[in-house]
Image 1 (cartoon, rainbow, N blue to C red):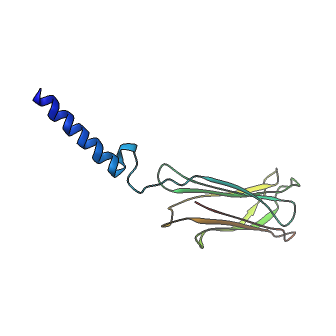
Image 2: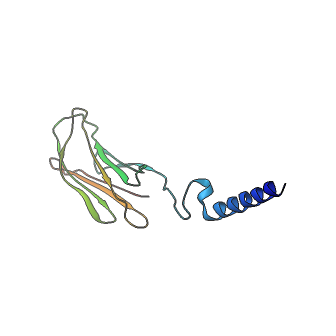
Image 3: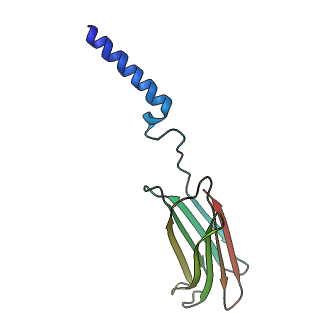
Length: 136
């Protein structure tokens, strides 16, 4: 009888410590996984910009920024930039595929605190601009 009571006391004390530390729920105390974002924004012309940011199982942030042109035309050159808390994670020229869209995907280590991600693009033929920002 004494063994059962001692085991039960140890079990109850351990459960209390785990609950207090946040380990009972499978997460470390203070660790919060931010909700993924998926934002669409109208560009200065007829195109639509999209920004998706999600935390991967590895802890890294998966960033996907793209533009979809209403007029489906391949080979249109856009200048695109993606930043995370003002640090550039992509900058370059991209071309649309046959459906008139392009997408830039990056996997990065998150910055301390909130991650404010911004995607910007400019159509080099028409001057149309797109900007979309989200915070995780």
